[in-house]
Each structure stands twice: as C-alpha cells, then as structure tokens.
Image (cartoon, rainbow, N blue to C red; front, side, top):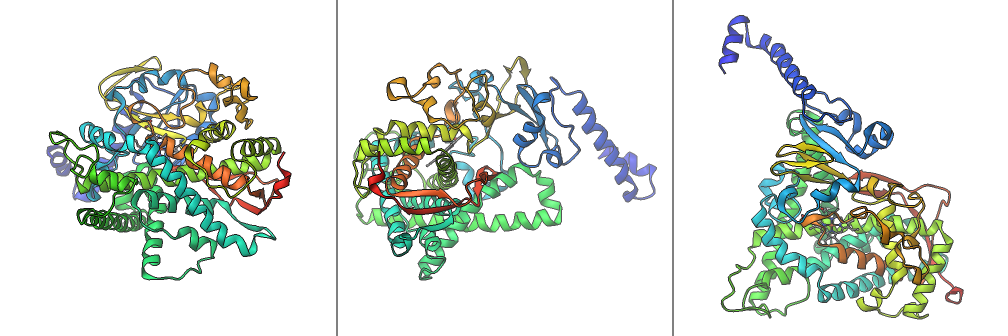
Length: 530
Ligand code: HEM
C-alpha cells in the first residue's frame, strides 16, 4: 500500500499508475523466471498466461515438436506457476515410493464450494483421502463387486443387441466413439449408483426413446457427467485470473459451474434416496453405493460392535461417487475405441482373439460368462495392456512435492509440480522394441506364443494406471470391462472401419478423447472361427 501511496504522489491520477504497476509486475515476473533454480528446456512464458498460448492445453504436443531440445525433464508454465514434465521411467523411482511425499495433486479451488474435492482424485488432505481410500479401493478390486460388474456389462450389451436386431442383417454403421461413451456412462452410473441410465438407448434409437420425466432427467445427468471432465481440464489449465475477468472465458466458466451444480444436486438426491431405502430394510446389493452406505454400520456383515471406524458421511460418499463417475467413463471408453481401431487394422491380431474366444468360451456367441472365464483370456489381457501402452488415454498425471527432494539429478523445493508424461515413457524405444507397432505379444509369455519383452522391462516403464500411493483404484474394473467388451463384440460381430485408410482422431481433454470413429458392425459367420 505504501508503495502505491508513494507512486500515486508522483502521478496526477490513479489511472496513470497502472502502466507503471504493469511494468513492475512484468519485470518481477521475468526476474523470477531468469533466476529460477535448475533452469530446464521449455518455452519462455509470458505474464498471466504462462506458456498456454504456445502449447495449448496439451503439453505433450509441444513436447513432440520439441523432443530434441526437451531432454528427459523439461518445463512449462501455467500462469506464473512452474511445471516440470518427467518423461523417463528412471526418474520415477522416488515419485512412486509408497510415501505421502508426492501425495498432493492439482488444486481446483473453484470446485471447492460443491464439496467434490473431498473424495479421492482431488483430495489434498492426506488423512481424509486415506480414510476414503480404505473404504473404496478394496471394494473396486473385490471379486464380488467385479463378478456383478461383468454380469451387468453383458446385460447392458444385450439391450443394445436387441435394438440392433431388426437391422443388423445388412450391417449397421455408427460413430463408435459416441456409442462406447454412452455404454461406459450407463454401466458406470448403473453399477455405482444403481440408477437407470438411458444414454445408450437414446443413441441406438437416434434419440427416439420415450422422453418420460425419468429419462429426461437421466439424460441431463449423463450430459453433465460427460461434460465434467472437460470442465475440470479447463479449470486446471486456464489461469483463474483469465476465467474471472475475460468475458468469453467467464461465460464458459459460468456454464461449467451450472453443470457441476446440477451433477452435484443429482448425486445428493441419489444418496439420500438410497439411504432411506436401506434404513427401511431394503436388501443390500453388491454395488459401490450400498457398500459405502453400510460399511462399519450394524448392517455391514463384517460389523464389530467395538469397531472404531466411523461410517461414511453423505458428503464423503457424494465426493467418491463423483470421482468414480468422472474417472470410470472416458478412461475405459476411449481405451476400447483405440483397441477397436487397432484390431481393425491388424487381421492377425483379430485371428488370435477369435482363437482365444473359441478356446475359452466355445462356439456359442450368446453364452453368459463369468469373471473367472475372463481371467483365462491371456491374449485378450495382453491386447488390453498393449492398448493402454500404444496410445494411453491418461498421458499426464500431476504430483506435487512436499518437502525437498532430488529428482533427475536436481534438488527441488517444497511445492514443485511434477507432471509424469506416461505417453512418452510408454513409447520410449529404450524400454520397448518398435514402440510405434501395436503388438500385444510383448505382454505374453513365450509359452503362450508371445515375446514377453515386458518381463525384462525397466522398472516403472509401464504405468498407465499411475503409481505410488494414489495408483488407480479402478484398474481391475477397467481391465475387466474392456476384456468383457472385447469378447462380446468379437465373438459375434465383424467390427470394421468405414474408412479403412483413415487414421484415428483424438484430442486431449483431461484424457485422450477419440472422436468420429465410424465403424460398421455386422453379424459374423460363426463357422469362420479358426
Ligand atoms: C483404462 C482405464 C483407466 C486408466 C488408464 C486410469 C488411469 C488412472 C491414472 C493414471 C490415475 C492417476 C494415478 C496416480 O496419480 O498415480 C488414476 C487415478 C484414479 N482412477 Fe483411474 N484409470 C482408469 C479407469 C478407472 C476406473 C474404471 C475407475 C473407477 C471406477 C478409476 C478411478 C480412479 C480414481 C478414483 C483415481 C484417483 C485415485 C487417488 O487419487 O487415490 N479409474 N487413474
């Protein structure tokens, strides 16, 4: 204030101080930039925007164009905040240690008011996060939960098949990237919250399902779920100053806020309704919501009278459901789109899939199958792993350092932000033979006809689900969902690209989002099995 006072006495009015303040701000910004410790390669930032104007919201694309200069660790800026990008597995050793040292993630203060930062993904309070993780992670990985999930997937797929029935004889064409997003949205909403969800029915019927109040509400909710990941990415990469004061950005931010509020209110309604049903004696089902509502209460089959653990509060459950809806939809959906594209391009891989399906499930393309059967699909498992490696849907994850640490040969202060560049690590020729080639055999042992280069791999070179204490808790759910979908499609249908010579199109919005993937689905001649 006193500086402003002194300055104001030199100028005739307040407005004339503004350019001087700006000059001071810019000079201070560049002084800090040019004297920063451990200068690394990266684009030079400008005040307020940082490097967003050069690299957009996908630092990976900037990196690809500047790979020679970048080295194994480089930097970019969001506003005035320095960000480091690590793209070598050898630098991950300390970051993935099972300690809270790299626990913190990005801050999204604009979502604070909705209470969604109190779950897992964006929770930066270690003890609150730890409590939630202990409730959630064991359920998502439990055979009981996964068994029910595999059955739900088959039921939902059957519904789509029934709608295809009248037209499938001549084959059907549609944008697979949209179909799969509807599928993963419905299955996640249904299996996590038990609510009916109609986005797949709406897609299959070209929006001609009966628009009852329930359907309309459900579709609004689905749109909010799908839009949320874009919102979160936007809030993360666009500095808050820009969102607050620049008109176009401000109105977009307000629209995001309305959608987040709608999603928030709907999730609260779902929890309250189910809580009441359970209190009135409804039967417990093996989904996540019921589990979280009853855990450590007298209705919990493992309940002990002197249990010290306090049951989950509604606000904690809300934040967790929010997380799962956000993390479970686009991730699996886009991974499966990449898989479908790569299988369509590789007839030899398709033949191996058919062979394994015949061995494990026999020739009946309508059999209901179990989680245990899926576990026997070694080739399909390798195929899923390779899909996650070749173009990984989560190319970047952020970890924030607490305290000081030496990473990549440099000492870094408290609060340093490390982005792990999974896409580059998963495609580094130092770790992978011909990484650009889509080859599931690299994950398969020699005994099963593979090359198994995976077994000699550099530590941490394969971490599409992240690593350390915050490794993805939905890993088994995702892998089983993609495996089940692979079986359901390829045992019964031909899945071809409409434009076979076109490359897959995708863009980074929080995850790599595939778009405009036109496919043709037709009934397979079952006798064509090898
Ligand atoms: C192909 C599918 C998926 C991929 C590639 C993926 C990848 C990731 C990655 C890279 C992280 C960050 C881990 C880290 O910080 O080191 C993460 C976190 C997370 N994922 Fe997934 N994920 C997938 C599917 C799912 C599914 C299906 C769910 C839930 C049903 C889920 C729930 C979560 C949650 C809750 C977190 C935050 C964990 C925490 O901070 O403690 N993910 N995932």
